[in-house]
Structures are given as structure tokens and as C-alpha cells.
Length: 447
Image (cartoon, rainbow, N blue to C red; front, side):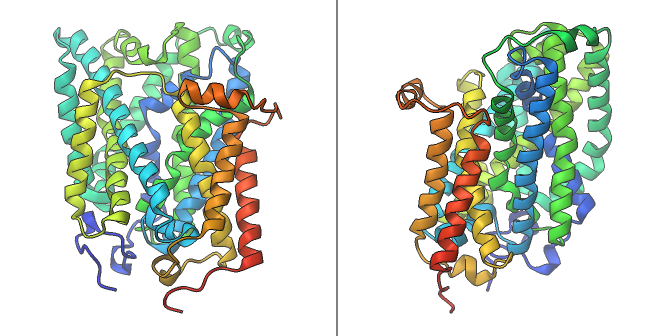
């Protein structure tokens, strides 16, 4: 098959050839470890308290990390097996045209996360420049970091790892995270924080759903990067271990920061860090620079997802379009709470991954090129299994606009005490696997 793009930074939707499968386990771990370091992860951890006590928040973080990162790591392994982008991969379980459904949602989430990233980066940078130089100029920082995200996205995954992560982020990020952790714990009465009861309004499993939500949003992107991995095992372990360490660390840090500094608004974290002194501000600045890679990843994956629908449009053009749109969005909207956004992502992508996993296992734990590109136009049974999991998640824990939440609440959802993630996953996986085994996988176009 003739590839649409031969440049390593802009490889299209065709299977990645062996010569470009150059990311080993360490490279993959560094990539996902760097993507796991994010101020938004700290803010997500902050959203768990004081509704939960610190011990309960830590249990929710552990549960959510284990569940969410297991999904992410396996999705990475499937991507390394098929060697195609995440939304192209969805052609196998959902059909060629059926894959357009999650593609549209994934493009919206990529654009939304890019806006969120640029907002929080610009907000923190403005607070930092106001403290050090006496001016905020948040609009200027938005444009500067939007341009930086664009430059990284145009590098592609291989260039990003080789030119940014290995040369810069691998040295600065650990130092910044360690220092901010010391600052958060310095002078804090950990005994009192540990013994303080939660205020209620959130269960441990619902807290785990928040953690899964921020992790599972990466699942549709995983193959976009692990398609360049040398092996499935390297992709699995590199993705899982690489993301788990910073994710659990920063979620815990966010919870401790809110409790130790009595911050009622998680979005106020950057300003609180800046006000702590020059050294802490410099550590924040280091994180801001590396935070740009989060915007890069979302913009890049949104562009790659669009290529599932329009494969002949140059990837660079789509990257510029997505990044430019997100930068404008970050200039005109305000940073808002996004806890319900995380629940909404979980309700879409948890059952979607369950369907993908069920079909991949039924295919013998291997997708051939024909399984992806020779799939039928639609596989309605597995699309129905995905929708069923989404509906179950929303029934157990409705999220989204207030009118939707109020409507679902009238259906009297039960309180099973296990959150919504696992029931949704089990329902979609069971339905998809049972349908695939009973009906059989469809014949490919090549067959």
C-alpha cells in the first residue's frame, strides 16, 4: 500500500513501515511520562477534596489510575499491533463509516483539551509575569504557547521525543515536580490533613471515575503514538509505567495542595504557586514550558483523527487548522470547572475501548491491514454495544448540560456503590464479545 505521507513527522493513516517503528520501551515511557506531567492533572486531583478525606482521595486516585492506565496501556499495545492511528483503528470494530462517529467526538475532545491546556498555561504564565515583571498580558502568552504547541505538533511523535523530550523535558520536569512537591509538603500538618473528614458529595468510586476520566481521554490517542513503537510489549509497558508514575504523583499533589493551602478554587492553584517565591515560580515556569506538550498532543491527535475522514488533506494543514482554532478559543473563553467534562469523556471512551478490546481479542489479539482497511462500512451490533455502555454510564452518573442531568435523574438511577466506569466497561465488553463470537467477525474486502 502506498503511504499518503513519507515524512516521519506527518505520516498519514496507512500502517507505519518498519523503518519508522523506532520508539523503544524507554522512548515510549519518556513520551507518556512527559504527557502525564500536567497542571490539569494537579487540578483534577484538587477536585477530589475536600469532598473526600485525604485517605479516601488517595484510594480513589489509586483505583482510578490502575483502571484508567490499564485501558491506556492496552490501547497502546493494540496500536502497536495494527500500526495505524486510533480513529483509523476503530474501523475494525465499528466499520469504516461507523468509525466516523467516534472520530467526530475525538476531534471535539482534542480541540477542547487544547483550549483547556492553552487557557491554564496562559493563566499561570500571566500570574508569573505579573509577579516578576508587573504585567499580565494573558493574550500574549496564549499566542506564544499556541505557537509553541503548533511547532511541536508539526514535529510529529518521533521528532517530539528526539528533539524535545530527550534534550529538554527529561531533565527539567523531574526537578520541577520534586521541588513543587517539597513546597506543597513544607510546613503542612500532614497528621491533621490525614485525620480531617471529607465534606461529602462525592464517593470514592465517583472520585475514581474523575481520575479515570482524565486518563481515559488519552485512550483514543494512544495508537497515534504507539504505532511508531517497535513492539507491542514495549508499547504496553512504556505507556503504562510511563504514565502511571506522574499521573498518580500529580493527582496526589493536587489533593494535598488544596488541603494544605486551603484553596477553595482549584483554578487558583497557579496563582498560589507564583505567590510562594521566586524558586517556586521558576519551577512553575519549567512546568509551563513542558505543559505545551499536552497542547501539542491534543492538537496533533485531533488532526490525525480528521485524516480518518479526509485522508488526502495534508496533515500539516489540519494541524495548523486545529491549533489556530484552539488558540482563538483560548483567547475568547474563560477557564471553567471541568469535572463534568471528565465524566462525560469517561462515559464515551470507556465503553468505546471495551468494544475495541472485545473485537481485538475475538480477532485473535491481532488486527491485520485488511481487518482495518477492508472492514465493512458498518458493524451495527458493536456500535449498539458502545451506545449501551454509554447509556449505562449516564444512567448511573449523568453528566453534561443541566437539562440532560435533570432528565436522566428522573429515571431513578440505582446507587450500586461502584461508580459508573466498571459497569459501563463490563456491559459494552460483554455485549461486543458475545455478538462477535455468536455472529462471527465479518469477512474483509480482501477476503
